[in-house]
Length: 162
Image (cartoon, rainbow, N blue to C red; front, side):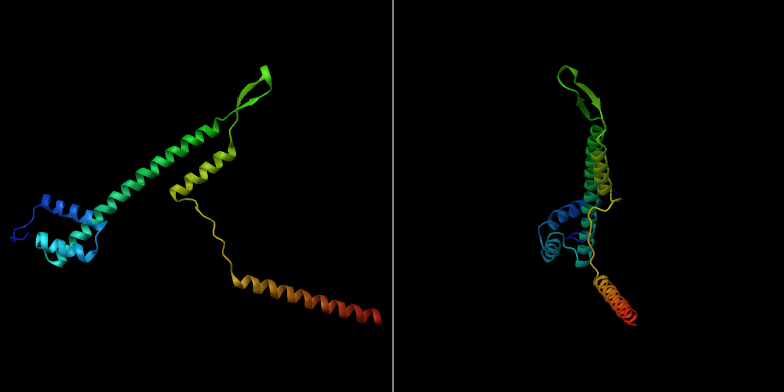
């Protein structure tokens, strides 16, 4: 509803959502709520509804951007991969030089990994996880070996002294 109590048509509603969307980037929530109340004369519950709609519009925009950018970068990587498959190497010297096509499989592999990372099907980072329990097990194993060696040494000394 507008200031006059008349229902807002769809076009005006989309304009309100657009303007709120622009404010979401720079203004605080209290400011936006107050602005909506003053400019369009709506209650807080309706203002929150407009804000929610504006956020959904932003999400659609970002999802589209993300998918577009991903497609662009994947296309770039595939072009590079094609070039890596058809890399020309010159063999020979002087007049006997000959161009031979040899795939740079190492580069192809690296590009394929980057492509998989971009699509989210390959881990992008390696994380080292250190568990304190491992140190305790290693330390316990070392103590056990020392104990066994000590027993062997004592038993060996006892046998040799008999």
